[in-house]
Image 1 (cartoon, rainbow over the protein chains, first blue to last red):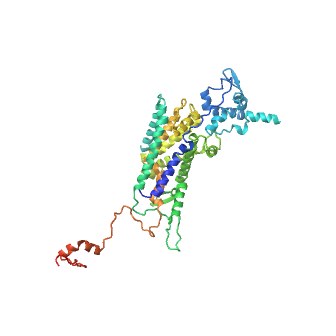
Image 2 (cartoon, chains in turn cyan, orange):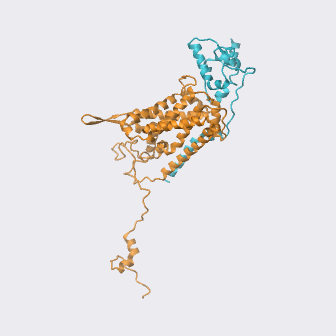
Image 3 (tube, rainbow over the protein chains, first blue to last red):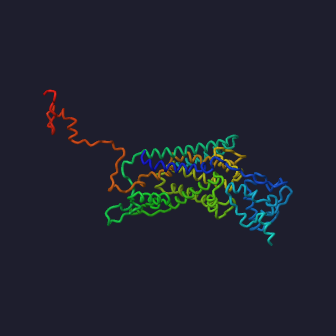
Length: 131
Length: 340
């Protein structure tokens, strides 16, 4: 083999790069998020699996409907009416952003832009006190 | 036909993964066994290919140059095009690897009435190649968020920067579009440009179609076919794979298995195909040698080891026979002591 001095270190660097997740995680899968479910509430606007896969699309549809099309007609699911809104519907039951939304979003490194405008219930409460 | 074959092969792979992932128990085959096998073949094959290259001697000094080599002091030396020192070679290699300088020189030749041939600069190849490669790099780096737990801050930043335009939710990545646009251009170039079409083979089309299918299935999974795409379950599987404790939690949509199977195919195919230019670019003698053949003699490493054999040595070896045959010698045979 020629040029061992450069090729072997080069290959080592390549292998370390490719297997980087092994060194980074150090064989520990870490904790799997367990979002806090609302107490006493069993029903949501859609079944659990549907919400897991598509809640971001639903929220976007609601945002567009309310803010762009002025369509504030309530959503009726299973005899219950929900207002179209993150704070007015979702956060009524899922009251804790940190213990519900953030658990999975942090795990999967998702940074939704909801909170650029919306207030989390905790922040909203503190704002009321100051005014 | 060569490109039709590539499409058929990729469609067959998609069907295998789609049908296979519906068979009970098979998700473990497609989600655990195939990825492990693919990464093993990828790493093993990659090292094997590089070692094979490293074992091949370079008999001649064969750098490609397109600039004035180092010569007399008053002749201006083009340091990048005809590198004379290791530092200049490194600079040339880095520019080639990071900016694809050689593609920047791509020309288009056309035959006009006359007959007259013209050469025109054609930068499209460079533009789309660089979009494609950097997008692909970003896509690979971005996917690390599914393999690393906790996710490093820098990955979260890249993810944010890549989806900066916030189109839709989950928001679209710029590099997804860049990857697909690049691959579509590189593919259609092979169809439209007659010269390139003539020299294109199935193994030129296949990787392009495969990467196209990977990009499309990835985009479909993120934006359209979200049924069963529970990102937490997927990350659990991915982190499980790299910590050797894979678990498949619940039912993951078959689009995920299709995507994963195509990526595994790409990894398996990689070391045995033109895609090895990832490693090959570093080992190209036309680029990594110094253009100093006038100053330094290049010795072919496979030259046999021939020792110099002087006439004096030759006569020492054959003196007896020469004397016997009556051939004149410079040094006579020593007087024999026994006869005295």
